[in-house]
Length: 67
Image (cartoon, rainbow, N blue to C red):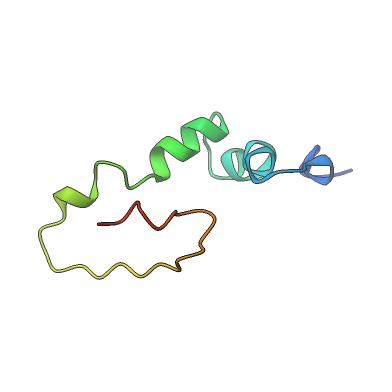
């Protein structure tokens, strides 16, 4: 018996996050996982020096997102 039914049928990152990631980490949906994992609105609250590194071709974090 498979521990994570549906994972073998996924064809996108969003489908994988819905079938596995969100459930594995206790989120109700992929959307709830994305909302909790985003840095949107949080970077401005950092009060200590912070270096963020990112690849220009990162498919998960487009180059224009970080200031």
